[in-house]
Length: 173
Image 1 (cartoon, rainbow, N blue to C red):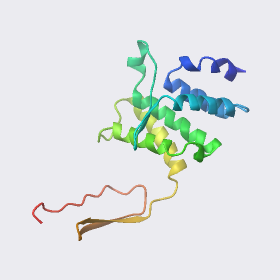
Image 2 (cartoon, rainbow, N blue to C red; image 1 turned 90 degrees about the vertical axis):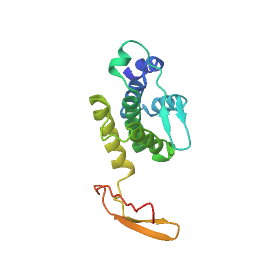
Image 3 (cartoon, helix red, strand yellow; image 1 turned 120 degrees about the vertical axis):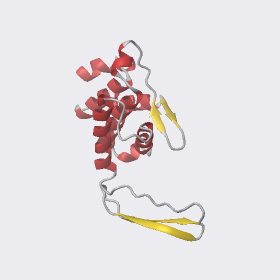
Image 4 (cartoon, rainbow, N blue to C red; image 1 turned 120 degrees about the horizontal axis):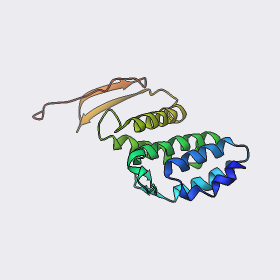
């Protein structure tokens, strides 16, 4: 009953609220149809390129400057997509979660942190849930770096906690 009551307010919610509404719909018996319908509404308001994906937020008002950020809202949407994929099947979402993760990661602009506490909390939770669902298998590969035919380094990755590796060579070689 509450789900149907708030469904009529969906268009008035910001992206963060819409994501949480869909999360709630996924957990209420019989709410799957509402979750699918509202996810389709959200997917209609996105910006996509070949490798990036962001939801657009139509929130307005004075509180938005204080309580909202584009990245935090998209991290909330990522967390909802992970829940949706668990319940409805990842195939229904295609590569949307992966592209959204890429956009969120690039939004940090090389920093080791997000802009504020809310972004840190919401994004780290969403990224951890994404990793648990989509990247559960530990990496196991070797990367070989070549310039032309000359190999100047290789690295093996066998765990998620591997330290970053830098390979370099003098410019005059």
